[in-house]
Length: 272
Figure 1 (cartoon, one colour):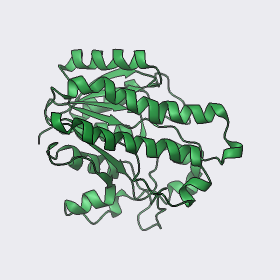
Figure 2: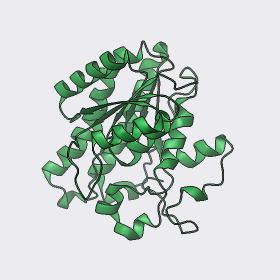
Figure 3: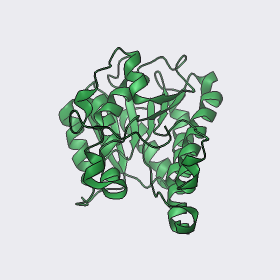
Figure 4: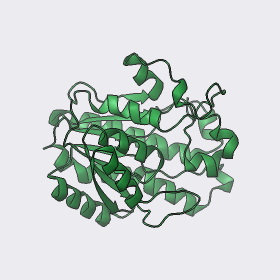
């Protein structure tokens, strides 16, 4: 399936994994809706919707940067409407925006709990809802959530149950949508990395430079997303994909070039 002139709405697209997916699909001629909150650069995070849009245009796609806080349903509806008006529709939604706080219950403040659930769960749910009318008219329509397979091993709950709940909810949303939207030929899947990915969140919140050196570049997720999103929506739905497995199915098993430090020991991501 060609991405030429297809419109892809990506949340959290100003940096990291969201931007990497945007650049990968832009190189195939896609129109990218760069939806994120960042309009002024934060030195710790880097990137804004405008800088990402410039990179997307250079990569060969068309970009529409739009400031969006996905916790606000009015902003969500307006952004989706503007994106559809700008490009004539929406074919793909990538729910990438996410908040993380790896705290046990006693150390989890209400505002942190609410932030994760407002972005990861509520935001994903209502972004999907707003896009469905356009996806019904789209070409080979897909929804892709950046969330893990649901692993009920207690070790994934005991140290950070609030975050785990929020990410598993994103996956349940995708599985629910896969069933609900099958009759409209709209696919819904999830994608998660086998190893940690070198992003600002990993750098600032999880493990600093040490963990970055044990991680892969966001491009591995972008390539996996590319292969998922080009599959027929009628056949590829209801899956919880892992990046390595997606690439292996395409015959790609040499993943060394994705490592931040070639030859380094890689750190397995959460929930796997």
